[in-house]
Image (cartoon, rainbow, N blue to C red):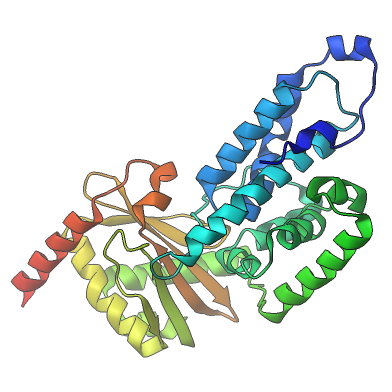
Length: 327
């Protein structure tokens, strides 16, 4: 792994300043930013947390105070994340079924001046588009477009010249723009539509569900081959509505509950078994007053950071018994 932090950012030789340096306090103040950068590069909560911890170890080992802790630490966490992403991509090529990022319930970093960029960039749709970019291209795009770093800082982070970073940004913008649909519904509109969706879902209301779905809506699940899932991919308002209206009442019969919650900045829910353990997450993409995509994550490896994880196979067996009793 590239030991980046040793030359990222300028330093001062002021020993008096170093003696008064609250290194841990400075790091903790920047931790939310570092996690947010790492998560957007990696699409994994656990790997982002590991990258932030490795960044602290490198920072703790420095003996001279950087001129800008923000630039220095952002460079370190970016390089670490790029290294991790390169190996993660090999694993994702062998992944069973659709791959989605690990669900994120709360983004710890907030910047009012970049609120729109931050919210848009953490959505499942945006993170999946970022998979089109190479690791360095992805880091440059995020650091510039989402977090607003200067090119000198970006160049130090990715180990390229400023001119090369500008070229990477141009390519990144082109790749992202080619597949991007911005989900521009305001937050209140999305929440109101999501509330209607979950009411219809709970009641098995076929017509109510169908009225909220785009004609070409897609229902896609990520189980990683490690849990049963509702379906791999279902397309079309009628197909999706029929599947959900038939299946979700069975979930309720076996005491599966759900709590509405924003997931990756979009309206969604956490499903729990009868003991309160996390079964899956669900997130809605909303555009033009309709639900465009429904994504579920039931892979237990991606849910552990949310709390104790349910035995999805046991829930599936309970649902089959409930279906037989109904028939």
